[in-house]
Image 1 (cartoon, rainbow, N blue to C red):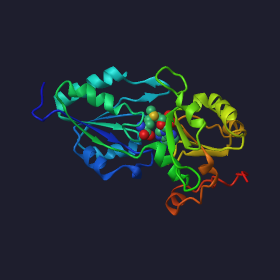
Image 2: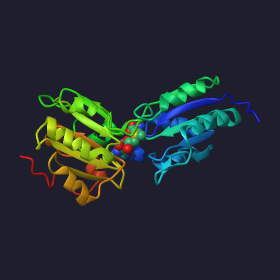
Image 3: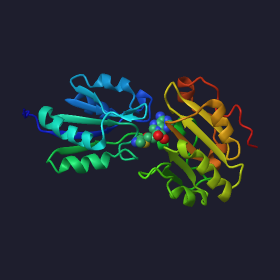
Image 4: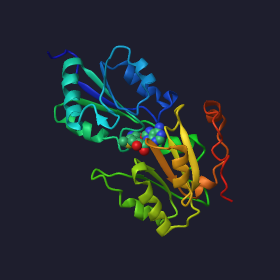
Length: 263
Ligand SMILES: C[S@@+](CC[C@H](N)C(=O)[O-])C[C@H]1O[C@@H](n2cnc3c(N)ncnc32)[C@H](O)[C@@H]1O
């Protein structure tokens, strides 16, 4: 049955994990939602703001998709027609490897109004939260954000290009390709180039390792680091200053550079 409310989709970025790293605009959208469809990397604490909404998990857990992308697209349209305002809550920023633009393109064919609320991407927020400055004067003039796994399940060719530059490289969805990434860097750069890997960044389950191209594989095995994680490669990892007081307050686990011996 069609609802009298205007069918509308708002795509909302939930931030990297810490529930306080969502925007005020995102909270306001959740408060006004009739339906929330949320993904696996979203912090479920945020659902408390959606006081009047039907809430549906549409993400991937234990390697299985609750819904395919086509089913999610159709669900957005049918929910919006039935209930009104659908909020699509996605981890990080919806337009960074988040399929936000695909969902907007799909629903606009059905005449739905659309809006977007950007979020703090894990690509930026997670390195910052552990004190890694992606750009730094005299050290890195730019950074790349690359997917480790393309839609063909292959490592992005951009990793080869990026490894030849002095830029900081941030790789998402790269843990299954870590060996390949390391061998590219061994070919194109030095073995002592610093690298950090952070799993569940900004959450209380956060784990991180910092090492070099030659040492990181062993450290990852020792600390049992796995997905979801981001890989940060570049000299800025070495020059990282102390954690800010905000994050020290939130994370009293071992200081990331305690075991560093990069000098
Ligand atoms: C499908 S992408 C979505 C990225 C998201 N749209 C963003 O802007 O952060 C999922 C990947 O993001 C990275 N990721 C997301 N949240 C993370 C977190 N809290 N800590 C570490 N990596 C994270 C991981 O590489 C994960 O495999």
